Image 1 (cartoon, rainbow, N blue to C red):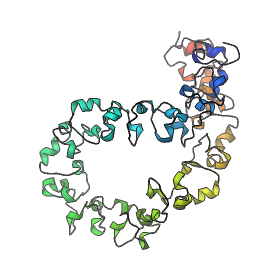
Image 2 (image 1 turned 135 degrees about the horizontal axis):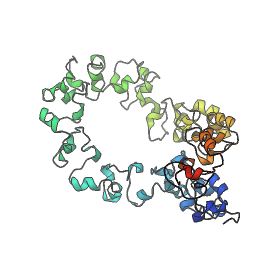
Image 3 (image 1 turned 180 degrees about the vertical axis):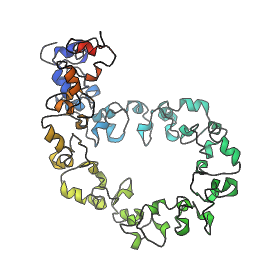
Image 4 (image 1 turned 30 degrees about the vertical axis):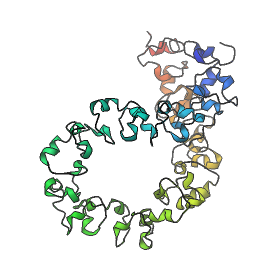
Length: 447
């Protein structure tokens, strides 16, 4: 203590006055990073892992090389999987520790694992610890109820099908009213009945009360075409007919698209002609990917959707996102980011590669901040002036947290603490510098 070197650990606490003041600079640089010997081990060229390899510790001062599109997602409490769930990123800053304890669990969205909600399907298996324990209570109550979304049971809405069975407790009563009123109505989504939209098909039958009268004003030649999965256009595509029972929703998303066969839009085949136009969304996306046979992406319809998507989309094989990225690439030819559309979106992302010269300092989003606070070096510029006084930002360089700390500084001009919000919060922090005369004895909490 007081040897001029931050020893960290137990010495870097309020009780020890942050190692006799030796750790102040470290805490300013890495708030929330309390590890042993930080000034020796952080940034020493060796990835130390563990608590060092976290977002709070700058991924061991940069030694661990965690390169992800959204660094702030590391350690945010949600397992993001993929490139986040690697040793270089501290297994998503520890967020994936529970998920990784089940090595044979292969699911699409690790973030849904152990989130307190029983997700069912592949999640609710022994390999996945029954959704990280989320499904234990459900499985005990309904051992033979095999549905994809167990959390729908007892949600107040009749979901029907496999949910509305004895094994699933008839959805804990969700379907009682529906079953009593329409005992012979067998539809996939009972809650569509009486929702104000003519859904057609089996919904528009006497057994289902003609969709609980939703279809009464829909006068078409073939009522069975309503909701059959094909946009039939004409009189079917009207408000009274629920826009063909929802079949025309995709087509209607292109209000200036005029074609003879609307059901061909988005049917999986490039139809060309009037269909392959901007007005028709390039045949609802069917023609976009067909022009790039060597383009292998997860979501083909993002090609030529009007947004520059980056990554595998922004490649020659994909026509630079079907042309969506041409303007971006011309403006920032050396800016390689996962989410180009965040460049210039009005929010400053103060970390590489976004806030770099190659990316125009986040498309100018960070220029206003640095013009106002040129010497303010913080990881989250959005926290400046957000209405909350943060100790590390309470400097003249950062405008005293963009004015957030003005009231605090006026009341406690000589009170220098890391968490100003803890002063006068009703809890006595009986350690210096909180419980001192300068801080009015923790804002009166310790009197």
